[in-house]
Image 1 (tube, rainbow, N blue to C red):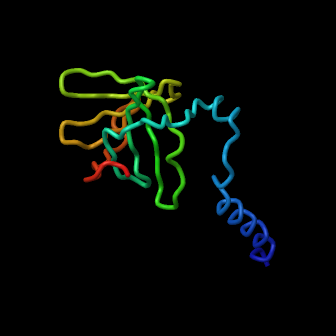
Image 2 (cartoon, rainbow, N blue to C red; image 1 turned 135 degrees about the horizontal axis):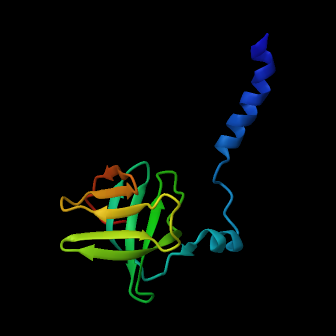
Amino acid sequence: MYEKKFLPLILLALSLMANAGTKELSPEMKELLGITPLPKDAQPIGTWMGACARSIEYSKAKNSYFMTNRCSDGSGGKDGDELIKFAKGELHAFKRKQGSNHGDFYVIEKDGRLGIYDKAGLIEQLPRHTKLWP
């Protein structure tokens, strides 16, 4: 009895999930969210594997760093979050130029993994991909 009432709702939810992220954001929305087109000269300094490949790339022309996600379904890779780099000794850390509500930052650990942290501490560590992207 209840299954028949909820079936259309479940089908609608599945349809919306299947279409999530398939429409490209407008240039205005990208600007509002701080999403920057990846400069043509951007070169990866490292790629780490999580649910998607996460790269930190450097652009000489802009003298800036960017974080880009590329997923196995082909999504991502055209735009990135501009980063601010800071370092102490051998540790290199990055945070989003636009900021983050949670204070997220990224550290290239001594063993090569990418540590993802917030104000409370370590969130996860991603293993370094053996090859630079692509």
